Image (cartoon, rainbow, N blue to C red; front, side):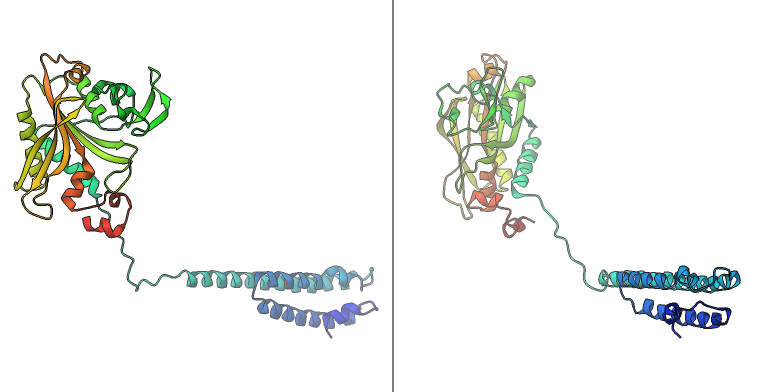
Length: 358
């Protein structure tokens, strides 16, 4: 007789029914075990648990026992409790088995095949602009130049006034210079430095002659095409002392170019020009005697003897001190050294281009 059939009987249970009840409990426990084993998900197992607890409720058995028959109640309670303990143990074991199966499945899914070849990581390299910058610093350091630095957001005085730029100079216009929404102590708008010359002024005002320095850095101008970028890199050099001439400038810069391009087969010329911060002023051109650029004069820098007004803004006496300055684009030198025709290629982060410099 099934356990449920016993519970459905209308008559009270007697001592003579106890063996049938115990046998029915044993059979019911086996059925519960089978149901637990068939459950493949934790949710299904919990549903079977709920059914088992309801079927093994001691209250359902007590209803069918005479209230005065304490002996039968005690024996029946012991049998039901034993069945319940067996079911609880089976439930614990099945829960553990399902948890182990889930963990093993997860481990199988996340398993790494160590026999497969590993993924190689690409080794990064120094960007060609940074390479050029470092090369410039190394060459000038070898001939006694210090390296200066300065802020990228500059005042009007350091950017223009200290360099002898008149108030109406085109470089001060918003068509040439990036201004920021902040003002200096004189009420003038600050700007992103349009050239590295402000760093020359700052360095000279913080050092006593002889002053011999280069100042490389980022600069910003409202300009963008194949040979110009709104953000680019310049380097400038300055040498101020009591007996400095343009002959020193020509010697220093020619030596620099020969070391930078690793050849003496080049010609350098100084072509008269005009800059407000130097007088006299000259553009520096170079012509290679061999290679893809051979036979053409290429403009690479501006230079000149520092204007007396600028010397005065350094805090020095122009009657006693004089010097020369030069400056050019780092990208321009990199383009010539590496044979790059479009400036924008340096900033596109195209690995097909950058991998050539590994």
